[in-house]
Image (cartoon, rainbow, N blue to C red):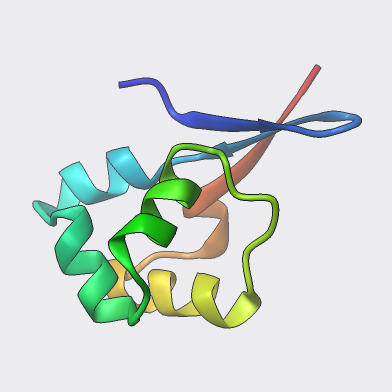
Length: 78
């Protein structure tokens, strides 16, 4: 699967949740339960349709996946 992308003025924010979940053998539902957000909201982020993400949510995702924010989100310059 290709990572989800959100266009920005200077590039694209690329979301790597699919890869991280696959590497950890975790489902989106399991991550949503661990983070304490709905599967729908997590899916919006995963598919690159989120307009924003709270730092507390990003930190909870990183805790659940044992990773850093840069593992979840990167910027691809255009």
